[in-house]
Image (cartoon, rainbow, N blue to C red; front, side, top):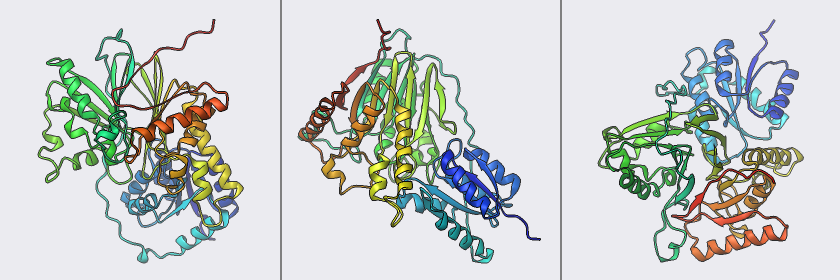
Length: 462
């Protein structure tokens, strides 16, 4: 009697997980399910499955990490096949998944016949025809956040300040003087903490200000990295507080598609690109790769979620005693994206549309009722038509998301490098006109370098 084949199915999406589990059970498989990557890896190590089907974007251990760890395990590496699933369908995601050790990458929502055919093809491969996988040693990726004592007076008025608002590349010049040309960086001060969202070129002038403000006093700052595309990390080598031995700079993020956070940040400072390596920085640099999507920085409660962008991109929500801030720097809303981009012949199926609706609803739930939303609004509706699938938002969809989530204040962010001040003005006016037409009171503005936004707790109803 042949051995019943075992599948470890790992997906945070309950509906997709249940659907695939039913299909594979009907095919005679023993199905073990998990809703996060860490538990999925445990099940794989304990049960030596013939097949793992896992999503790319999962809490505690993403799909890229899971693939690498399975391929590093001598008991699984040449026995277990891996199918990775993704809601985005970006070619770079597929390439990175295969490089990490996946055998196949399928776009959600999954089609039963396509999945079964893929499984049969993979299980028919002989071990001798499988490619060799050579992986680097993986570090222990356990959450390790030290205590976060207050670093500024608790009575200091809380605020958010924009230091870099541009996407892709810095754009200095006369035509961008109003909104600014530095890439992504936002400072948030609340509950005794200094929290910096991303380290684009805007972090350089922020660092200069902090150096002047603190002088010889020790500074402790926390940088939350959304992802490691250049426009979100390229300013860190010029962050002056990292060069003072009395300072502590905590950098928190999530492991990316290919390299760890430390490796990626360090590589841009290696010779011949930069004269000083990260290891030579005089300041105390603590880099932490998170697994959990909820953690705290002092009294600030932080929530994280995966965004729809090539590779791995994280959005953050900061819940402070003075209100909430959501930061979604690079994100393409799913419904319009999936309507145009998907499996051939499946882009407009009811299943695809429903899957996209659920993914957008997940973002709406994440930003629900937030006081300040800073979100990728790179394109206007005309531009977006030729840039579908690039991983960035259209202002129409962004306003719709904000209205659905009952956001208090919306800031258009990640301005296109080709947009001058006049173009951004026109996008803001269109968004405001749209909300007025709908009878909504959503406050809309464009993120602007130097703009300071006060945070204050919501007033109790009279």
